[in-house]
Image (tube, rainbow, N blue to C red; front, side, top):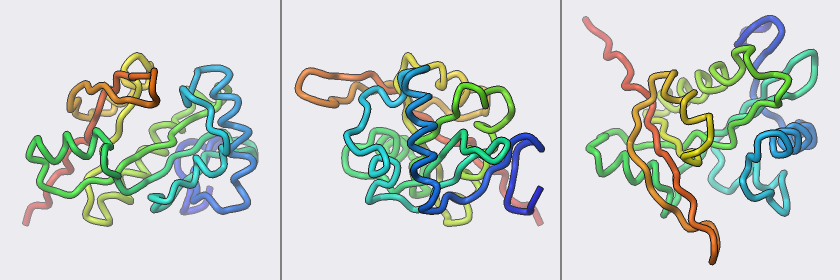
Length: 180
């Protein structure tokens, strides 16, 4: 395993490069068919994985195939998790962890935790506090709680003229302060 990989010998995490996008879209299609994420399939999935607010992204690989993804993005107006973090007295500016997914065959191998660890580490290296939102009924909410993420609350967000979606918002655990 290289120094830029994380997870288990069977699964590694590395920075995403442009040549990875087609494989990322393929893995996302599997996730969408299996788990319904994203709720609304994007017209241009590669663009959805590369929003204008993107700071950096990672992929999880298993046996040389991309099986997962996570991104770190600046928050935008109307993003509920950064807004809740700011109103709850978070103090530190926030950044969003999003576009996180693992193909069904890669689940249970530590890839989700490894992708989250990489995103949290990068956010903190930038002096930012990681936050995220997830569809409230999504089982991923329990995963974030198991990782120790703080539940900031539930908000309803309009995703179209006839679609209001309840989202659960989370903030990463506060990092331990160094002691002298």
